[in-house]
Image (cartoon, rainbow, N blue to C red):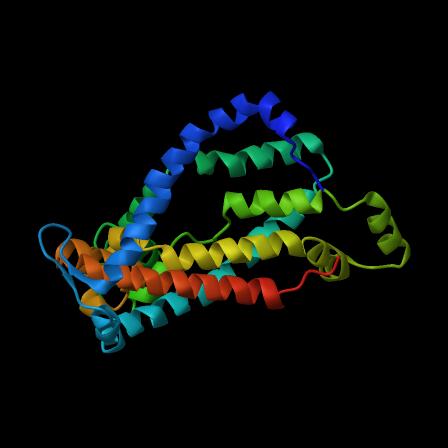
Amino acid sequence: MIVITKNKLKNYWHCYLLIIAPLILVLIFNYYPIFNGFIHIFYRWNGDNIEEFIGMGNFVKMFHDTELWRSFVVVGIFIVSNLIKMIPPIITAVVLHHIISSRIQYFYRVLFVIPMIVPAIVGILIWKYYYEPNTGFINAFLRTIGILGPAETIQWLTNIKLVIPSLIFAGFPWVGAFGVLIYLSGLSNISKEIYEAADIDGAGPIRVFWCIEVPLIMTQIRINLILMIIGTIQSWQNVYLYLGESGGPGGIATVPGLLIFREAFAKGFFGYGCAIGFLLFLLTLLLTWVNNRYVRVKK
């Protein structure tokens, strides 16, 4: 236990003084908007001149908002699909880990890091172009292999049955550089003695993968799982860029984040948007707690 005495405070007062300025900035620009948003969940507020206290009115409105509950179903579908998308980075990291030549391994690591420099919005816009019915890459490819006729098109982002599958498929083969590097750092900590012992026992590559590598990178998998759940629940920008403010035909791909944006900035119901945001906060907190409580990592 560290004991802070008056003498230590006197000697290091300038250190405490230096952190006051960033602390004030964090309080103003991070915590004050959160606090202000929490206060306005009890108001009918248009962000400007209308500010009327309505108590639990926004929560009653949420309870009867079928579009809101449908948006949670959509985000649930995205969470399940993103769970599956966590598999390719793990396999890619294991393959990279087993490359014997350090130069070649370094070369592949660089190849995976370079896409991280490119803003994510660029990738989304490229995939949006892929889905273009007349000039996009996917329909052109299907015409080339004979699945589509010369004049046939598939409306990937306007057909109500194809919108959500198209959003899930975007980014294929889903090998995110961030995930690969995190798993690779975990794999690099596995000692050679463990692999030698597995080799003496006659364990093949698949058994080594399931019995050694996956258990020993469970900490990294858990971190990525938490980040994925939080990111998926809060994300709305990708849906907005692909489908616009409406969330696609009939609002089929509307997620809670996009609904907040639409209610606040399109309809002027900022108070209701804050209430939905508070609900998202509680849901994220609950899922994070469940993950920390029940997803155990055996050391």
